[in-house]
Length: 602
Image 1 (cartoon, rainbow, N blue to C red):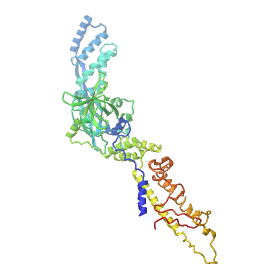
Image 2 (image 1 turned 180 degrees about the vertical axis):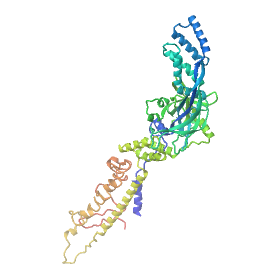
Image 3 (image 1 turned 180 degrees about the horizontal axis):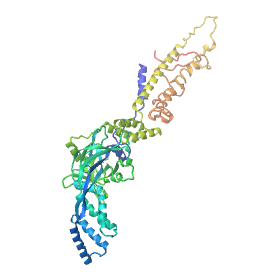
Image 4 (image 1 turned 120 degrees about the horizontal axis):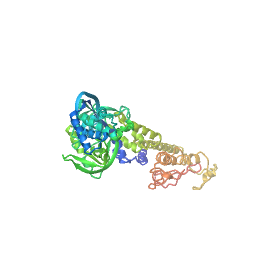
């Protein structure tokens, strides 16, 4: 019972302080907000595309001769009045300018009809709101009005026809060498005429989301995956919202929705999306094009359109292609969707004026379709793994990243993080804290060792007592008997020279209770067992691999609060026995045991 109680006390004292509880999994590590936010949200932000295909038909044009003759007469009168020069080049330019201003007066449709298969489309940004494939984007990212659609097809499909028709009308100038200005004027005539008389047939629309293939990586293995249009609102300045569904999806990464009240004027907003200045340029690789860009800027003001639709004005830069992209608060929650921006006369976006549809409208539209945003284990584990990664807990992050990869093999970034974490571990950069279980096992091992040593000490103490010889009685011998040797008659308290016998220094001196048993020996309770080897410097004290400044009595790690001993008590001198509680240490004198003075109660 005494051993068990003593072991319990030893356990309580010897166990080191367990590592402090880790930060909550969702708490941001000590990295910039943008770095943390981009890493968490990028997997859910996807490049979207809409495509229209159809047959473009335009008639052949011919000059309305009567109208053209009247125009020639006007030209002659204008030259005569001196309003234009009389050279052929000046007259030709004047004629083309008049025709381009009113093409249907001077040109007429005729046969044959000309046709061409054409395809037009655009790129935008979308983001997953449910793990099974519901995606939010802008209304103008999924549909185009008739006028705008005709203009897109005209620019895409009619260029060849416009050039051919312009050459024919220039050839009627009877040998006049056309300069660049005349060519442009002639082409503008047919751009207008062919666009006005163009017909679209067999028009088909398709929507898709660009996803990476199994194995991860936003790279050249990505391909468009068909998407279904579930709901669509009105284009800007209306409630510019659209909901897509990609079938056959599970465990998709998502982003959480916040509230309109999460942000106010002056807060920093973060826009994620795919700017057209990257996706439309031939200079960047496909890998580069498929990684969203993050921009940030202040919340400037809350605006309301004439129809009562609220919008947020922000200075966070945005460009064509960013439309439909999520806008985040510093906490990583969606507070709106990028819809529009002001554009200069030459078509360049203004970085100082971007307009965001508030998240309240997005929630309203999702509710109309009974769609509830959700998060799966994929996103939760990925966010936890990212936090570990940014804290340099690389070995802790690896199993979580691998779980994400198993849950969602198409994850675009997790494979890279796994590789980076493995390289960091190999380079010795891992700072993962030891698990609590390891500390408990170490403490339990120390407890077991303490019990074993205590038992061994008790056994050794018992054996030592059994070896003690009975006390001889000094009876006065009868006359004539041999007197005992003089050394037996020494007065009590006189110290003779040390003996080297069986019970001398080796048996009960430094070996039994001295340096070996309780002193500095390898198996005792001295500096090796409880100080340098037991609970002192080796497991939790000052040994190089397990040093803990709170425990042990090593000189470099002594705790001034508890003193230099193993547990805060003064340490006994090296080689000297530690007195047992309630019992005086008996002295050993010249191979014979001499009892101490009888100063204890019987």
